[in-house]
Image (cartoon, rainbow, N blue to C red; front, side, top):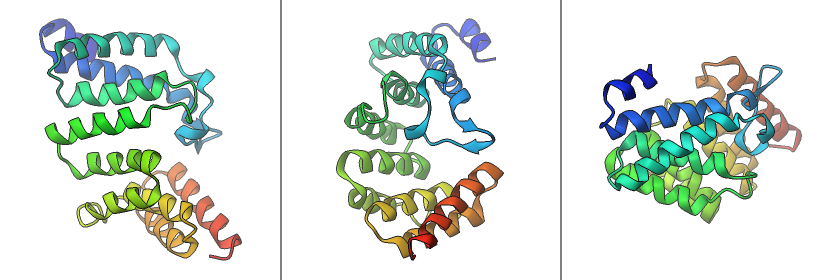
Length: 196
């Protein structure tokens, strides 16, 4: 459908941005689950990523960048391209991702974008900075499981096991997908075993 939209609207940059975003997201699908369980980006087997889709998505993103007036889909696609181009999680250009999220916040200032930006900030400046950014959107995202999961991860990194466990428990109570609930319950069990 996105390809058809691009064909019908060849001069619409956001149509191309949407296609690139879908291609880059789809390229990582084979690695996102293992035996029905959620696999985090940092743990994904990147050899399972579809390089053909990544190359096609990257080419579209480069064409969008040359226009120098990105819209929300183009920026989201650019963020995905940075992830897809990294040889490993550790090699990800997190400062570039934060910069792209800053631009995305300027065009689409939603709490979910702010959440994702906070996670990227955590990779650049650490979990304390991420928690500060998360606090800014806490009211808007209190019923969103990924907000609480992100808080749990940052609190865990800081060694605040009890608070991390509580955040994961809240996330698990809100999660809709079985794989997400299983993952969150594993985090809770690990923290309980560690004395949280």
